[in-house]
Image 1 (cartoon, rainbow, N blue to C red):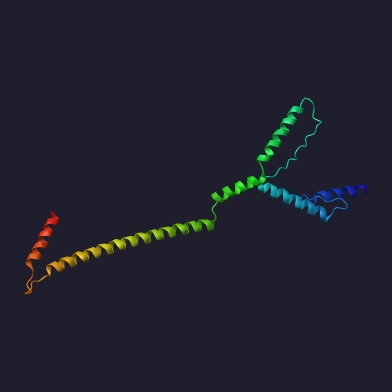
Image 2 (image 1 turned 180 degrees about the horizontal axis):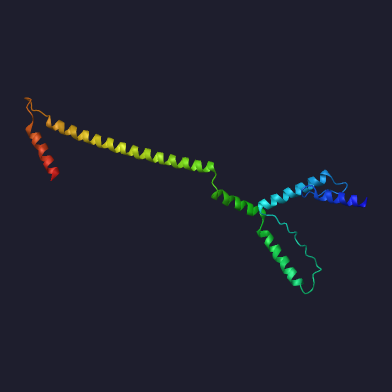
Length: 177
């Protein structure tokens, strides 16, 4: 009978893939507690803040010849803690990650803004060229109209006014020189 009990104990502890059989009085609640602890450790590990080593609680019972070393190490650890404040580290890392990491939506928005900017630039350039062309045409028509008025003047008898035509030709020659 004693061998049957030892066999049952060995089978129950090694059978379910690393899961330990709880002792009597610990059932589902014990497994649930262990599962929660495992998930919590995974979460800490993912965040990079897992300290699986238990912090050594320093006591006043240090050996006399090593007491100064333990006290110095304790003081250093106390100084390190405020610097590594998880809230501050998390906030700064989030800000840097947001700047460095571009989501596909953000990339699409930036590309859209870039294309939109280029389109408006092209439209403005085309509008400017059109205005310049219209201004040049207006000046050309005005000049042409003036020359037509000068050259089409007539005397009282209906003959072309040669004096005005000669003045026009003289002005034209003077402009070229």
